[in-house]
Amino acid sequence: MAKRVFIGREALEELCRCYPTPFHLYDEREIRSRARALNAAFSWNSGFKEYFAVKATPTPAIVRLLAEEGCGCDCATGVELMLAAACGVTGENIMLSSNDTPDDDYRLAARMGALINLDSADMVECLSRALGGALPETVCLRLNPGGSFEVPDNPAGRPAESKFGMTEEQIFESCRRLRAAGVEHFGLHSFLLSNAQGNGYYPALARLLFSRAVRMRDELGVAISFVDLSGGVGVAYREEDAEADIAVIGAGVRTAYEDILVPAGMGDVAIFAELGRWMCGPAGALVTRVIHKKETYRTFLGVDACAADLMRPALYDAYHHITVMGKEDAPRTHAYNVVGGLCENNDQFARDRILPETGVGDLLFIHDTGAHGHAMGYNYNGKLRSAELLVGEDGSVRLIRRAEKPGDYFATLDIDEDFTAALTRGNRQWK
Ligand SMILES: *Cc1c(COP(=O)(O)O)cnc(C)c1O
Image (cartoon, rainbow, N blue to C red; front, side, top):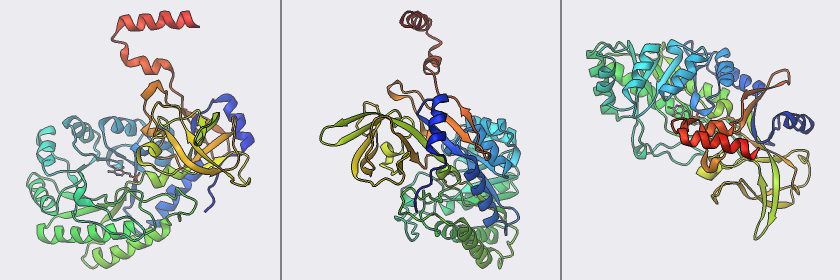
């Protein structure tokens, strides 16, 4: 499918006069329409809830607009819990799906009344210790079924190699101990494939979890309140990839529900999701300008963004489609390496990418950066993290996170008076 650019070149150039490149740009209409499509696809389940995976796009303006669409927050740390609460998301609208969890994060989650998802059997004791024995009424358990997990159109998942979740025996044992300690309701969670392509992942995972949920009810006599399908539904990063069809996915989960849970008398189990990538990935782009062109053994387009703004290509060799603004329909005739300025050779957004003829001054729209994009930013090489801007439903654009300034980079050195004084003197002198 042709990749969509959600802003025109003129409007983008206009924007760049106020907000220098690079920046991440998000499309409110796309985010809302995804949230609505997801809720519609699961409307057959009265308890359905999406807990947006905050780590994907931890920006309050985005979290708040998803909350307006009925989404809660899935958090992994105490800081993400604070962010969710400050966005007005409270109580059981927050899920703590963490691993290797410090006691303080459990305490904060419990104080907020958030749902807690336990990743390992020893966390039963940790939770109990952290909360002084006062366990919440509901606890979720994260299953790792081991072996391999196969879904058409995807490389086989290898749960047995993954650090997440507990074995089925550990789930049962944890469930017994939690119940003995007063926990009354249980959730069951698993996350087995990331960026899953096609529509088969959620239905296959649902079958696996539903059958385990029935077994837990039958063998332990416990009440299963919800099954959490977590994240993992993928995005069509390449033009030739097919977009996941969330309506088809919802219908596939429904069939599994009606095949397994309803006949077992468990037709009241709620379905939860913790999607991050699918909710926001295609609704964001990294906007960057070509500032240098260099020919050696390849032709390099040096842009003003770098891997510190978007780490996925450097980290996973991930593909992100690139549109040269204003040349959408020009023939793609030239091979370029599109690179950032980090002193690291893997700081390349694309290698041998076939684009229209492109030169210094051209604006590039790097697609699908709305999830796990800005969020993974870092400050290597003294690179400062970029701004984030949101295109509203009425077409107006607003700043939702300012770009970092040198002072942000130096802020944690406020304990070093000699350094901060020298920095202030230097800034005055070089001005
Ligand atoms: C990362 C993560 C998610 C979101 O994953 P996506 O691939 O962005 O959908 C959801 N739940 C947990 C526990 C995660 O770690």
